[in-house]
Every structure is written in C-alpha cells, then in structure tokens.
Image (cartoon, rainbow, N blue to C red):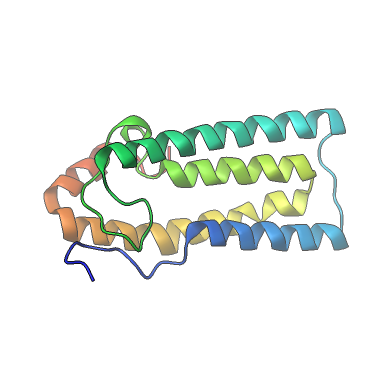
Length: 154
C-alpha cells in the first residue's frame, strides 16, 4: 500500500481503443467498405502509426524524467508539463488516436475508422474528466494553471 495519490478506477484507455478497433474489424468483416487505394492505405497507415508511436515514446520519456507514473494504478508524484505536454495535456491519448487511425487506414476499413469516434468520446467524457478531477484535487492551483494554458487534446 502507498500513501502517495493514485488516480485509479478508470478503464485503461488502450482497452477502450482496442474494443472499438476490434468491433470495427468485426463490422468490416460483415460489411466491408473500402476507402483508400491499396498504394495509399499502407502509406497513410504507416505514417500515422509512426507519428503516434513517436509521440507516445516522447511522452513516456517525459514521464520517466519526471519520475511519475504513466498508469492509473501507480502513484502520481507530479505534473508533467515538458515535451509534448507543453502543447497537449493528453499527448498519449493523441498518440493512441493516431495509431488507431493509422491501423484503420492500413486495414482500409471505413467502419473501423468510424469507430474511433466512440473511443475518443469515451476518453473525452469518461477518462479525462476523472483524471483532471484527481489532478486538481492532488495538485490544486499548479494543475489549474497548467490546465488554463495547455489544451486538452491539441
């Protein structure tokens, strides 16, 4: 047990994205709706996935430098405001969305692509508000100042 603050209780965002993606693949298997020419689908897909993974690694590096937790089940010791957190309060969710969009492009499934919207809505309405409430309670005015100067997504 720890005496440091833990956010906890939030469905892990990768699970939200995975469920939506897999549901999209299932629907695409039943009603395939192609969107992109083969030559384009992989180029677009790889570009989005590489960009998303690069952003994800950059954000993880900033968490490591700040010596605070990335996951909800480990103690949060500080607010990370450097690197990609200087322009987005949630660059890891932006990165997950980019990877999702890239994978959806690579499989060329319109229904997979459309189901990114429920994932984003779930993150935006269920996950982020809980995290922000936790951070405001834990870090008070420091977090409120950060929140007032950096956008939620991009």
